[in-house]
Amino acid sequence: MPSGRLSVVVTRRLPDVVERRMQELFDVTLREDDKPMSREALVEAVKTADVLVPTLSDQIDGGLIGQAGERLKLIANYGAGVDHIDVHTARQRGILVSNTPGVLTDDTADMTMALILSVTRRIPEGLSMMQKEDWPGWSPTAMLGGRIAGRRLGILGMGRIGQAVARRAAAFGMQVHYHNRNRLRSEIEDDLCATYWESLDQMVARMDVLSVNCPHTPSTFHLMNARRLKLMKPDAVLVNTSRGEVVDENALTRMLRAGEIAGAGLDVYENAGAINPRLRELKNVVLLPHMGSATVEGRLEMGEKVLLNIKTFDDGHRPPDQVVPSML
Image (cartoon, rainbow, N blue to C red; front, side):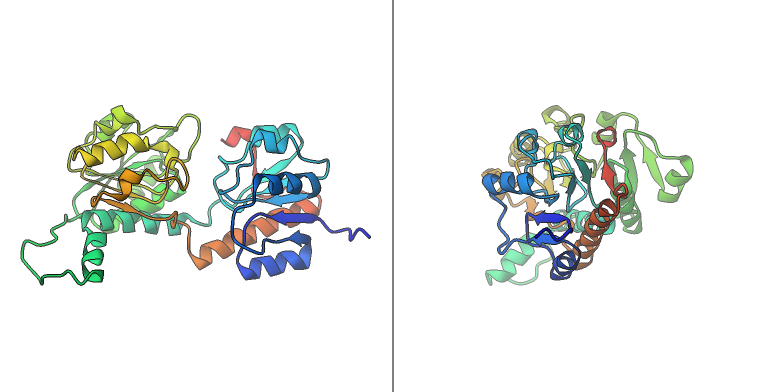
Protein backbone atom coordinates (compact mmCIF):
# COMPACT_ATOMS: atom_id res chain seq x y z
CA MET A 1 0.00 0.00 0.00
CA PRO A 2 1.22 3.55 -0.65
CA SER A 3 3.00 4.99 2.38
CA GLY A 4 2.07 8.59 1.67
CA ARG A 5 5.75 9.49 1.81
CA LEU A 6 7.76 10.90 -1.08
CA SER A 7 9.61 8.41 -3.25
CA VAL A 8 13.25 9.56 -3.43
CA VAL A 9 16.01 8.01 -5.53
CA VAL A 10 19.65 8.82 -4.67
CA THR A 11 22.18 8.21 -7.46
CA ARG A 12 25.38 7.87 -5.38
CA ARG A 13 26.41 6.87 -1.86
CA LEU A 14 26.07 9.76 0.59
CA PRO A 15 27.41 10.09 4.16
CA ASP A 16 25.77 7.53 6.45
CA VAL A 17 24.10 10.13 8.65
CA VAL A 18 22.50 11.76 5.59
CA GLU A 19 21.23 8.45 4.26
CA ARG A 20 19.79 7.47 7.64
CA ARG A 21 17.92 10.74 7.92
CA MET A 22 16.53 10.29 4.40
CA GLN A 23 15.28 6.84 5.36
CA GLU A 24 13.51 8.32 8.36
CA LEU A 25 11.73 10.97 6.29
CA PHE A 26 11.09 9.43 2.87
CA ASP A 27 10.71 6.21 0.92
CA VAL A 28 14.27 6.36 -0.32
CA THR A 29 16.16 4.12 -2.73
CA LEU A 30 19.87 4.19 -1.92
CA ARG A 31 22.88 2.86 -3.78
CA GLU A 32 24.57 -0.31 -2.55
CA ASP A 33 27.83 0.66 -4.27
CA ASP A 34 29.36 4.01 -5.14
CA LYS A 35 29.44 3.64 -8.90
CA PRO A 36 27.51 6.11 -11.08
CA MET A 37 24.06 4.93 -12.12
CA SER A 38 23.73 3.67 -15.68
CA ARG A 39 21.64 5.58 -18.16
CA GLU A 40 19.03 2.84 -18.00
CA ALA A 41 18.84 3.08 -14.21
CA LEU A 42 18.48 6.86 -14.38
CA VAL A 43 15.64 6.52 -16.88
CA GLU A 44 13.87 4.12 -14.54
CA ALA A 45 14.43 6.50 -11.62
CA VAL A 46 12.92 9.55 -13.33
CA LYS A 47 9.95 7.45 -14.47
CA THR A 48 9.06 6.23 -10.98
CA ALA A 49 10.36 8.69 -8.36
CA ASP A 50 8.89 11.87 -6.90
CA VAL A 51 12.37 13.25 -6.22
CA LEU A 52 15.74 12.51 -7.82
CA VAL A 53 18.94 13.30 -5.90
CA PRO A 54 21.77 13.35 -8.48
CA THR A 55 25.38 14.47 -8.26
CA LEU A 56 27.74 16.08 -10.76
CA SER A 57 28.62 12.64 -12.15
CA ASP A 58 25.07 12.24 -13.52
CA GLN A 59 24.06 13.78 -16.83
CA ILE A 60 20.47 14.93 -16.31
CA ASP A 61 19.98 16.22 -19.84
CA GLY A 62 16.88 17.08 -21.81
CA GLY A 63 16.58 13.57 -23.24
CA LEU A 64 16.51 12.05 -19.78
CA ILE A 65 14.10 14.62 -18.37
CA GLY A 66 11.87 14.06 -21.39
CA GLN A 67 11.36 10.47 -20.22
CA ALA A 68 10.32 11.49 -16.71
CA GLY A 69 7.01 10.28 -15.42
CA GLU A 70 4.23 12.43 -14.02
CA ARG A 71 5.48 11.81 -10.48
CA LEU A 72 8.86 13.49 -10.80
CA LYS A 73 8.53 17.02 -9.41
CA LEU A 74 11.93 17.81 -7.89
CA ILE A 75 15.57 17.26 -8.81
CA ALA A 76 17.42 17.96 -5.56
CA ASN A 77 21.02 18.13 -6.67
CA TYR A 78 23.71 17.11 -4.18
CA GLY A 79 26.16 19.85 -5.12
CA ALA A 80 26.26 23.54 -5.98
CA GLY A 81 26.97 23.30 -9.71
CA VAL A 82 24.04 22.42 -11.96
CA ASP A 83 25.61 22.55 -15.42
CA HIS A 84 25.02 18.78 -15.67
CA ILE A 85 21.25 19.39 -15.36
CA ASP A 86 19.07 20.81 -18.13
CA VAL A 87 17.30 23.30 -15.90
CA HIS A 88 15.38 24.86 -18.80
CA THR A 89 13.81 21.55 -19.87
CA ALA A 90 13.03 20.67 -16.26
CA ARG A 91 11.21 23.96 -15.82
CA GLN A 92 9.21 23.37 -19.00
CA ARG A 93 8.15 19.99 -17.59
CA GLY A 94 7.13 21.54 -14.27
CA ILE A 95 10.05 19.94 -12.43
CA LEU A 96 11.83 22.05 -9.81
CA VAL A 97 15.61 21.98 -9.46
CA SER A 98 17.50 22.75 -6.26
CA ASN A 99 21.17 22.73 -5.30
CA THR A 100 23.45 23.18 -2.27
CA PRO A 101 25.15 26.58 -2.55
CA GLY A 102 27.41 28.29 -0.07
CA VAL A 103 28.56 25.35 2.04
CA LEU A 104 31.81 24.62 0.18
CA THR A 105 33.24 28.11 -0.04
CA ASP A 106 35.99 27.71 2.55
CA ASP A 107 36.85 24.16 1.51
CA THR A 108 37.35 25.14 -2.13
CA ALA A 109 39.28 28.28 -1.23
CA ASP A 110 41.58 26.21 1.00
CA MET A 111 42.24 23.82 -1.89
CA THR A 112 42.98 26.74 -4.20
CA MET A 113 45.72 27.94 -1.87
CA ALA A 114 46.98 24.39 -1.47
CA LEU A 115 47.36 24.08 -5.24
CA ILE A 116 49.09 27.46 -5.52
CA LEU A 117 51.63 26.37 -2.92
CA SER A 118 51.96 22.88 -4.38
CA VAL A 119 52.85 24.19 -7.83
CA THR A 120 55.06 27.09 -6.83
CA ARG A 121 56.95 25.16 -4.13
CA ARG A 122 57.09 21.86 -6.09
CA ILE A 123 55.59 19.87 -3.24
CA PRO A 124 54.48 16.82 -5.29
CA GLU A 125 57.98 16.50 -6.76
CA GLY A 126 59.48 16.50 -3.29
CA LEU A 127 56.92 13.99 -2.06
CA SER A 128 57.61 11.66 -4.98
CA MET A 129 61.33 11.87 -4.36
CA MET A 130 60.94 10.88 -0.72
CA GLN A 131 58.49 8.06 -1.47
CA LYS A 132 60.93 6.58 -3.97
CA GLU A 133 63.79 6.84 -1.44
CA ASP A 134 65.54 8.88 -4.10
CA TRP A 135 66.68 11.79 -1.92
CA PRO A 136 70.40 12.48 -2.27
CA GLY A 137 70.33 14.82 0.72
CA TRP A 138 69.90 18.53 1.21
CA SER A 139 71.54 20.92 -1.22
CA PRO A 140 71.42 24.74 -1.42
CA THR A 141 70.27 24.56 -5.05
CA ALA A 142 67.94 21.56 -4.91
CA MET A 143 64.15 21.70 -5.40
CA LEU A 144 64.03 25.46 -5.65
CA GLY A 145 60.54 26.88 -5.92
CA GLY A 146 59.19 30.40 -5.70
CA ARG A 147 58.00 32.60 -2.87
CA ILE A 148 54.32 33.59 -3.23
CA ALA A 149 54.48 36.68 -1.01
CA GLY A 150 54.53 39.73 -3.23
CA ARG A 151 53.26 37.90 -6.29
CA ARG A 152 50.23 39.13 -8.20
CA LEU A 153 47.21 36.83 -7.95
CA GLY A 154 44.50 37.31 -10.55
CA ILE A 155 41.12 35.86 -9.56
CA LEU A 156 38.75 35.06 -12.42
CA GLY A 157 35.31 35.14 -10.81
CA MET A 158 34.88 37.09 -7.56
CA GLY A 159 31.86 35.38 -6.03
CA ARG A 160 31.85 33.75 -2.60
CA ILE A 161 34.74 31.41 -3.39
CA GLY A 162 36.79 34.04 -5.21
CA GLN A 163 36.47 36.39 -2.24
CA ALA A 164 37.46 33.62 0.17
CA VAL A 165 40.55 32.95 -1.97
CA ALA A 166 41.35 36.67 -1.92
CA ARG A 167 41.31 36.77 1.89
CA ARG A 168 43.61 33.77 2.13
CA ALA A 169 45.98 35.07 -0.53
CA ALA A 170 46.25 38.45 1.18
CA ALA A 171 47.23 36.69 4.41
CA PHE A 172 50.08 35.06 2.45
CA GLY A 173 51.22 38.48 1.26
CA MET A 174 49.97 38.21 -2.30
CA GLN A 175 48.68 41.19 -4.26
CA VAL A 176 45.04 40.50 -5.12
CA HIS A 177 43.55 41.42 -8.50
CA TYR A 178 40.28 40.25 -10.03
CA HIS A 179 38.03 40.22 -13.06
CA ASN A 180 34.32 39.65 -12.61
CA ARG A 181 31.15 40.06 -14.63
CA ASN A 182 30.18 42.86 -12.24
CA ARG A 183 32.56 44.99 -10.22
CA LEU A 184 32.33 44.61 -6.47
CA ARG A 185 31.24 47.48 -4.26
CA SER A 186 34.10 49.73 -3.24
CA GLU A 187 33.83 48.76 0.43
CA ILE A 188 34.24 45.07 -0.47
CA GLU A 189 37.22 45.88 -2.69
CA ASP A 190 38.79 47.84 0.17
CA ASP A 191 38.14 45.01 2.62
CA LEU A 192 39.77 42.50 0.28
CA CYS A 193 42.54 44.91 -0.83
CA ALA A 194 41.57 43.85 -4.35
CA THR A 195 42.17 45.67 -7.64
CA TYR A 196 39.51 45.35 -10.33
CA TRP A 197 40.37 44.81 -14.00
CA GLU A 198 37.64 45.50 -16.51
CA SER A 199 39.72 43.82 -19.22
CA LEU A 200 40.39 40.15 -18.60
CA ASP A 201 43.10 40.16 -21.27
CA GLN A 202 45.01 42.94 -19.54
CA MET A 203 44.77 41.24 -16.16
CA VAL A 204 45.85 37.84 -17.47
CA ALA A 205 48.93 39.34 -19.10
CA ARG A 206 50.16 40.84 -15.83
CA MET A 207 49.51 38.14 -13.25
CA ASP A 208 51.97 35.74 -11.64
CA VAL A 209 49.20 33.35 -10.58
CA LEU A 210 45.75 33.05 -12.16
CA SER A 211 43.00 31.36 -10.13
CA VAL A 212 39.87 30.29 -12.00
CA ASN A 213 36.85 30.58 -9.69
CA CYS A 214 33.92 31.27 -12.03
CA PRO A 215 31.06 28.89 -12.84
CA HIS A 216 30.65 27.08 -16.15
CA THR A 217 28.03 28.79 -18.30
CA PRO A 218 27.73 29.23 -22.07
CA SER A 219 29.54 32.56 -21.71
CA THR A 220 32.46 31.11 -19.69
CA PHE A 221 33.10 28.01 -21.83
CA HIS A 222 36.78 28.20 -22.84
CA LEU A 223 36.96 31.69 -21.38
CA MET A 224 40.64 30.83 -20.94
CA ASN A 225 41.11 29.82 -24.58
CA ALA A 226 44.38 29.40 -26.49
CA ARG A 227 44.60 33.08 -27.35
CA ARG A 228 44.10 34.20 -23.77
CA LEU A 229 46.42 31.55 -22.33
CA LYS A 230 49.15 32.87 -24.62
CA LEU A 231 48.81 36.24 -22.89
CA MET A 232 50.06 34.73 -19.63
CA LYS A 233 53.66 35.33 -18.61
CA PRO A 234 56.04 32.38 -19.16
CA ASP A 235 56.70 32.19 -15.41
CA ALA A 236 52.99 32.36 -14.49
CA VAL A 237 50.91 29.61 -12.89
CA LEU A 238 47.26 28.72 -13.53
CA VAL A 239 45.06 27.08 -10.87
CA ASN A 240 41.52 25.84 -11.52
CA THR A 241 39.18 24.64 -8.76
CA SER A 242 35.89 25.70 -10.40
CA ARG A 243 34.91 23.99 -13.66
CA GLY A 244 37.20 22.35 -16.18
CA GLU A 245 35.24 23.65 -19.15
CA VAL A 246 36.34 27.22 -18.43
CA VAL A 247 39.88 26.37 -19.60
CA ASP A 248 40.85 24.97 -23.00
CA GLU A 249 42.63 21.92 -21.61
CA ASN A 250 44.35 20.93 -24.84
CA ALA A 251 45.76 24.43 -25.34
CA LEU A 252 46.90 24.54 -21.72
CA THR A 253 48.63 21.19 -22.11
CA ARG A 254 50.47 22.31 -25.23
CA MET A 255 51.72 25.46 -23.53
CA LEU A 256 52.82 23.65 -20.39
CA ARG A 257 54.76 21.13 -22.49
CA ALA A 258 56.39 23.96 -24.43
CA GLY A 259 57.33 25.89 -21.29
CA GLU A 260 55.12 28.82 -22.28
CA ILE A 261 53.41 28.63 -18.88
CA ALA A 262 55.42 27.70 -15.78
CA GLY A 263 52.88 25.40 -14.13
CA ALA A 264 49.28 24.50 -13.36
CA GLY A 265 47.26 23.10 -10.49
CA LEU A 266 44.02 21.42 -11.53
CA ASP A 267 41.23 19.92 -9.46
CA VAL A 268 38.70 19.91 -12.33
CA TYR A 269 38.91 18.82 -15.96
CA GLU A 270 37.21 19.70 -19.20
CA ASN A 271 35.99 16.16 -19.90
CA ALA A 272 35.21 15.06 -16.34
CA GLY A 273 37.36 12.01 -15.53
CA ALA A 274 38.83 11.73 -19.02
CA ILE A 275 42.00 13.65 -18.24
CA ASN A 276 44.36 14.50 -21.06
CA PRO A 277 47.06 11.79 -20.69
CA ARG A 278 49.78 14.28 -21.63
CA LEU A 279 48.97 16.26 -18.50
CA ARG A 280 49.88 13.27 -16.33
CA GLU A 281 53.40 13.24 -17.77
CA LEU A 282 54.27 16.81 -16.77
CA LYS A 283 56.26 17.57 -13.62
CA ASN A 284 55.04 21.17 -13.57
CA VAL A 285 51.40 20.13 -13.15
CA VAL A 286 49.58 19.09 -9.96
CA LEU A 287 46.48 17.02 -10.64
CA LEU A 288 43.86 16.28 -7.97
CA PRO A 289 40.71 14.11 -8.22
CA HIS A 290 38.12 16.88 -7.70
CA MET A 291 38.92 17.21 -4.00
CA GLY A 292 37.98 20.86 -3.57
CA SER A 293 34.79 20.07 -1.67
CA ALA A 294 35.99 16.82 -0.11
CA THR A 295 35.72 17.50 3.60
CA VAL A 296 33.56 15.63 6.08
CA GLU A 297 32.00 18.89 7.19
CA GLY A 298 31.25 20.00 3.64
CA ARG A 299 29.65 16.73 2.60
CA LEU A 300 27.41 16.71 5.69
CA GLU A 301 26.33 20.31 5.12
CA MET A 302 25.52 19.47 1.50
CA GLY A 303 23.35 16.60 2.70
CA GLU A 304 21.57 18.84 5.18
CA LYS A 305 20.71 21.27 2.39
CA VAL A 306 19.38 18.46 0.19
CA LEU A 307 17.21 17.24 3.07
CA LEU A 308 15.92 20.76 3.74
CA ASN A 309 15.10 21.31 0.07
CA ILE A 310 13.17 18.04 -0.17
CA LYS A 311 11.37 18.47 3.17
CA THR A 312 10.36 22.05 2.34
CA PHE A 313 9.03 20.88 -1.03
CA ASP A 314 7.18 18.02 0.70
CA ASP A 315 5.56 20.57 3.01
CA GLY A 316 4.17 22.41 -0.02
CA HIS A 317 6.65 25.26 -0.16
CA ARG A 318 9.34 26.43 -2.57
CA PRO A 319 12.71 24.78 -1.86
CA PRO A 320 15.02 27.40 -0.32
CA ASP A 321 17.77 26.64 -2.84
CA GLN A 322 15.64 26.42 -5.98
CA VAL A 323 17.54 27.06 -9.21
CA VAL A 324 15.80 28.88 -12.05
CA PRO A 325 17.15 29.50 -15.59
CA SER A 326 17.58 33.22 -14.98
CA MET A 327 20.20 32.43 -12.34
CA LEU A 328 22.41 30.60 -14.83
